[in-house]
Length: 157
Image (cartoon, rainbow, N blue to C red):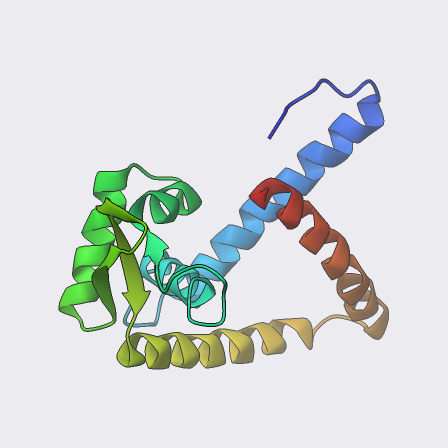
């Protein structure tokens, strides 16, 4: 990812406002998990493992370094999360078929069930929040989602 100085001050202001909105959204999502059995970091890790599953072109599971990068933590912190998930039977570590030194972390059936339950709970709470918005606000949010998806795709590259 390359960083360049945008010439347009309006673009810089939009970037700042967008980042602030995302920060507050992250807080909201973490609060959605407050009543769950798993922490927000644990759920995020389990969801990452879903993305590295059998339907992707990569081998099953996700490398520990990728998990750490996506969580914004160092590898030892990610490893702690993985150990907790493994002890709970929600994830398992496997050798990487392409690199004998590397380990991949895969989701177990129990892990998939935990993600499904958390998603159901989160979606119900979020639907309640969204129900307080006007039809126009919900339409604006729906229209913004593809743009946010493009931004996320740019950052994933």
